[in-house]
Image (tube, rainbow, N blue to C red; front, side):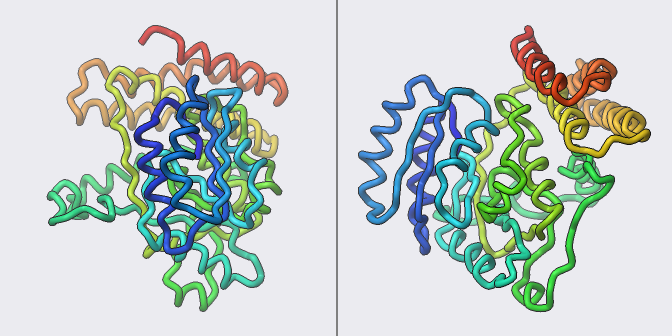
Length: 336
């Protein structure tokens, strides 16, 4: 787990996720908080004693960057499978066991990653779910939501996705092939992550799109699947209204920067990027209008991303890495 200034949420998540029907070999926390040593003492005092046989590693981070923190955890991992969980993710008690069963039945190691399925509530919730948490979403809303699916916010480096067909055995297991993973619930063979170099550290802070990037690069060589019966609840914090424009800018610029770094060079690169951003600008304007946002924050964010792209396209990969880190800091520190 990578974490930053979320002590109580982190500790609740750790308590839930170590109480699995199949315990972990290791628990690794990489904490970028200023007071990480104090939180470490709490975790080792309050939670670790209840997990005999589990190795606990709780370290600080030199950078406040999700990819950097995940790579430090990868460096410390000695397990065959690595679970990248958010600090507000809560696995159901049998979630890890069900995902590990998939890896262990894959004798040819064709599967590189297994994702949990999202549950609408905590496992220990009592009573029926409110209507807002059921799956009864109007068809028109579902079609609109699909326009902001991961695949619509990412530029596939090879021109398309590597979704591999499942074997008969895998189909009988009920697995669902996936093209990309959500970061809160993704697991991989550790060797597959190391083979692609881990997370790309060009992205800073919350690093929108780092999960798409890592899972896409793994999918070039291995199948990605979801185990629908392995459930996890993601206790997301709502996005602050003041950050909507900034978040939109970073979502789109991150996709462009990653594409420039990992896609093969070609004449269509510029047209693909500008086409992607133009479409997103139009869609974000529609989204603002439907939500009644008179200051159109998402459209403004998309327009700001579009303005920065011509300069990024002129840079070689090494310079792009250096300059894009500066640009992210500049955007995040600018007045909202």
